[in-house]
Amino acid sequence: MGNCGVGFAPVRPLDRDWLIGLMEGVEDIPGATLPLEDIVRRQTSHTASVYGLHDRGVLAPGRKADVNVIDYAGLGCDAPRMAYDLPAGGRRLLQGALGYVATVVAGRPILEAGRPTGELPGRLVRGG
Image (cartoon, rainbow, N blue to C red; front, side, top):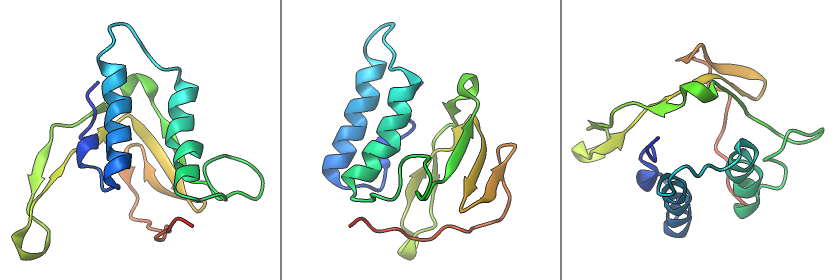
């Protein structure tokens, strides 16, 4: 599986380099894989800790959590496409993800059967 355009992720440069290194490190070692548990930890509790979001990143009482239901065998990426929807005609590269069956944010499903529900219960979160 490719890196799903992780180099274009809207994150700080040092974090982008870490994400690219993680993806490339896995891709470039023939037969090497990271355990699913390690991948999930790196994308949840580790990332929350890096950004100082101490009430997030794990499923536990009293913690805030968004949940993805993933079809692991179906994970993949759509072909990249260019969108011209930024101010002043600016462009950005978009690439959809495959294999995400459902996503629940603030207790409400925003994705079901791989399709958006139209619900947008989330809010902007800033690290502390």
